[in-house]
Every structure is written in structure tokens, then in C-alpha cells.
Length: 272
Image (cartoon, rainbow, N blue to C red; front, side):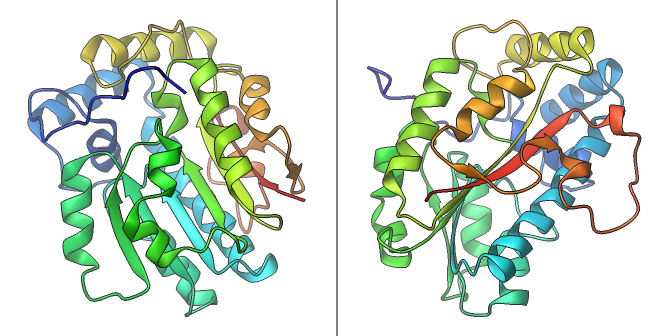
């Protein structure tokens, strides 16, 4: 993994935060002026961003229902969970399996404090502060190991978080470490925006977020491609229909947006 530990974020109201920007797109109120300004500037580049986030929540719902209902998973680790909103992982999982255990993970202290306050009476759900860039420390966090038995099947959820890490090698190291750490019969679900459909606009968006400080790390020109995201599933058996644009992943109703307007791909892989 990286030779130096990533710097832990503290509550910073002067730099936009991707989770709080997403909260603004979803109509939430847990954001600051700097987040709203960044969100509006991003909308000027790619006006379809709110639709992407809404479709992302719909994909999360379908994926978690599949994992709890069809795959029989009873343990979930949602990494980069973001601020609580409607249709959270524990709500979806518990609607299918009331005994499911859920650990939310985020490196934003505002997310962690808010989540802990909301879930303090839920004995099957916890929120911890950890960083996806340190997967070994994340998986060994005491509160996670109290709730999750990694010797039993678990679902690792990486919805909309890996794009915030510009270093391709590090992203592959993270997915590889997580895959090796989970037991056979476990699953890993990933969603991530890609550049294939809107290369020019997404390159401008990526540059904007990096210039604003919302994404830290080595500079990257543009978002990853669909093929690059597929590499995160190496060593796993993809669940049908594979890695696809998220409205196409097991749709359960009317498609709300044009296929070419949702440039986010997602998929689920199973460890044999």
C-alpha cells in the first residue's frame, strides 16, 4: 500500500467535501456554503449530476436487495457511506433480513458523528471512522470486528468512493486487499462514474474537483474508463449482467433517464 498514511480529514468548512456535495445534489441540508458553491459550479459543467446520484441510490437499493435476498448475505460493510439519506443500506437489508449486520465506514468526521447519533440505538448497525486507502486498518477496526466475522460471507460495498482516489495503482491495491481479506462466498459491489460517454465534460469535472481540493492525491486527467473499473473485479466471478451502466443493472421498473446520460457503471463480484 502507500508508503505514507493518508492524512485524516478534520471538519473543514473551507474546502468542499464530496459527500456533502452529494448531499446537496440529493436535496439534503447537511452541507456548507463551500459545498453548495462547488456543486453549482459542477452543475455548470455537467448538469446531469443530480440524476447520476439519484440513479446511484437506486442501484444501491437493487444491489443490497439482491445481496440480502438472493445471495443470502447477512453482513455488510459500506465503505465511503456518505451522509445518511433515505434508503440506507441497513434499512434496505433489514427490510429483507432483520438480522443483517451493517458497518458504515467513512473518513469524514461529520459523517461519522451524524451517523453515530442517528444509529445509537440500533444494535445491528455501527458507524466507524476509517479510510479506504488503509484497508488493513479499516478491516481490523475494533468496532468492525465486533460486528463482522470476516470468516463468514460478507458484502463489501464501494459505491461512488473509488473515483475520489486518482491513483490507479492504489485503487487496484485496495480492491485486491479487500478481495483477499473476505471469505469464499463473499461479494464486492462497486459503482463509479466513467469517462467513456462524456470524455470532454468528465475531464473538465475531474479537473475542477481536483483544483477545488475535493479530491486529493496525484493529479489525474479525467475519470477512469469502464474497462479500468472492470479491473477492480479481477479474481471475482461477476454476477449477471456484469459491469454495466447502473440503470441497466437488474432494472426493477421504468428507466428514468436516457442511457447515455448516466455515465456511472456498477457491478457485483463473488469470491468463489
